Image (cartoon, rainbow, N blue to C red; front, side):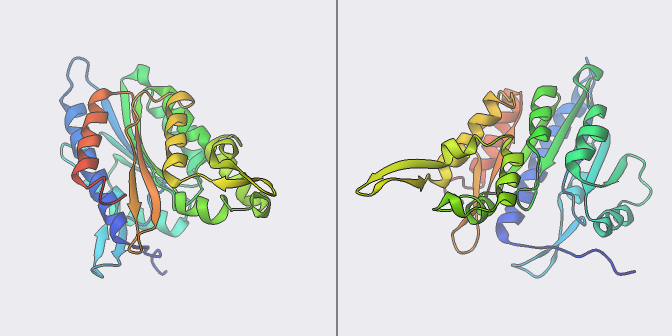
Amino acid sequence: MPGPRIDEIGPWSEVKLEILKRYAVEYSKILASQESPSFWHVYIDAFAGAGVHLSRTSGQMVPGSPLNALLVQPPFREYHLVDLDGDKARGLRELVGDRTDVLIHHGDCNRVLLEEVFPRVKFEDRKRGLCILDPYGLHLDWRVIQTAGSMGSLEVFINFPIYDININVLHHDPETVSASHIARMNAYWGDNSWKEVAYDKTPTLFGDIDEKVSNQRFAEAFRSRLKTVAGFSRVPEPLPMRNSKGATVYYLFFASQKGTAERIVTYIFDNFGRGTTS
């Protein structure tokens, strides 16, 4: 049986993997050191993939976020790796081996997280979790984000896929957007209120026209939504990630309830050149 398809990644994704790894180390170090009370801390990867990637820059294999997390010291107490692709889920099982602290979930993360994983990380049970929500496009349901925000026990990194949004949703003429893409955007945003912030009305001689707002403004609207709707109290400015042609591919968001977490992530984002990668 052939192995799973290995995804090729650009340099911006390698930067993201390093950011996630650095924060996972600090997160696990802090949670593992807590004694009164002690916490059971969990790593969750909603789009885990095959565990490894092919670097477009070097041509070499690069460990993915799940493998990086499995090497973190001190280790997390429990790992949940989710992927919709059966071949990738099987590949993860082969990489993980017989580790009993790692659970591989084959299925749609929007269901798996809400029904199987998040219930295992309840605040009142002294459980805490770091959750990576890193889809390639608009494949994430807002209910996952809002549930994570309401639980109080989870910190999340979120890929806000502005490239997919620009190409398929935020057309200059909104009437040309297909119903399927609008449905994907509604699911990711949680409702259709994105339409109210995505365009400015610009007066012309022939009447008002809809003009798309900047990527930065749209991302800031999503940041506000993470705070006011999802209920995360700490959401630092996201890190915009650009491809080799200078186009912003996605914004990497972080959301938490802890000031310490926000300070650590802001420090890491700044070290990776918030200005130079935006």
